[in-house]
Amino acid sequence: MDNISFLLSSSPSSLSTLQNLNRKPFRVSSLHHNNNSASPNSPQKISYGLRRKRSQGEFDNVVNFASAIDVLSKKKRPDLAEKLLVEIKSEGYVPSCATLSALMLCYVDNGLVSHAHAVWEEIINSSFVPSIEVVADLIDAYGNLGCYGEVLRILRDVTLRNLNSCSQVYSLVISCFGKRGQLVMMETVMNEMVLGGFRVNSVTGNAIIKYYAEYGCLVEMETAYGRLKRSRILLEKEGIRAMASAYIKEKKFYKLGEFLRDVGLGRRNVGNLLWNLLLLSYAGNFKMKSLQREFLSMLEAGFSPDLDTFNIRAIAFSRMSLFWDLHLSLEHMKHEKIVPDIVTYGCVVDAFLDRKLARNLDFALSKMNLDSSPSISTDPLVFEVFGKGDFHSSSEILLESMWKEKWTYRKLVAIYVKKMYRSNQIFWNY
Image 1 (cartoon, one colour):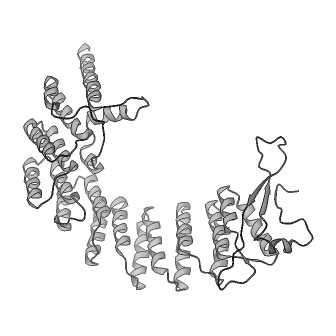
Image 2: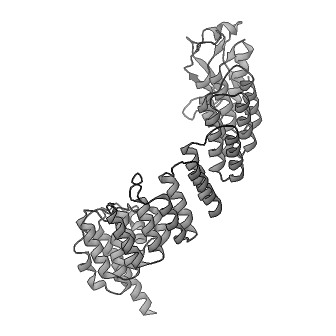
Image 3: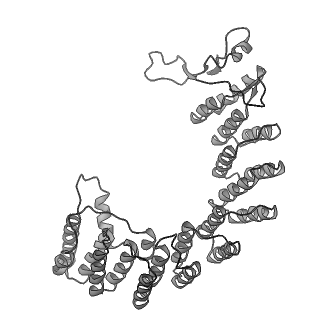
């Protein structure tokens, strides 16, 4: 007996067994050895509680084995799934659309592209209509394998059948190409979508901006942004962040400021993001007067500063050793009841230690709560401009260590000061 077999029935008529699928469990036998079994050569039987389901418009001989195939797919056994399908068809039964869809995904997940293509052809040439969820999973699976031709084949087949989900499938294919950096193919599909009379919605339009920001050049990104504006689609928060990150990576702080003003600093549905990024564009070039001027403009516009606002200014003051401005910023922060994080403490510690003013550090930190638990809440875009300070980097290593320690800012500062003192001693010994 082969090590992979289906125990459908031992009776002369296995058709009668399948007719009772709604009452009897279907058993799959395989020679996966069980370490706890007394006999290692005995087959392990896996029982699936399957049901026979008939939907409106389906014939009596249509059966649903999707759940069993899903289990086999997770166990990396597409061979068993294929034998199950053959056995069903040999008994005169028709696998449901859900069964075929599950089998197709099972093949793709296990790298059997030609088998999956054959099942797709069977579905598309029948009266079955695959659900948009199945199509989405299939496109994503093909994308993971780099089978972009199969993705385009699915798009072609869906559009030729004029299914109601055409617009959704176009968006799925655009996302599939975009998030894998296939910008030329993404652009081609988008143009085909527009020529086909389908409108690019806000979600897809913003996703395209993100893909160009991540994988394209600034010119391509700006072209896509201009196209979005002409379509009267609002650039959302994630799109703004993606474009800002692209400008920051290229050190184009002036262009970043122009972009933010074009989006509109008065928008309130994105919180302080636009204003904080504008402050960051000036702080990145250490244009301190412009930084202060725009901060006052932010207050006059009715926006309340948050942690990111204060930390952007505090980092700039710290790097430029502007102690009085740093002190006033901390006082303002306390007045606004904004809780500082490890970045804020790091600005104070690094500023004083860099200038060999460790004796004044206790006074500088006296108005801050050193016994609170450390946290990091600053926007990662800030680190893309300034990087992480020495105190921040050193403290992160301690916080991520395996020490079962209840850390406070007081402990972190004490360890860091001691570390810097020792490093100076080693330097002078040489």
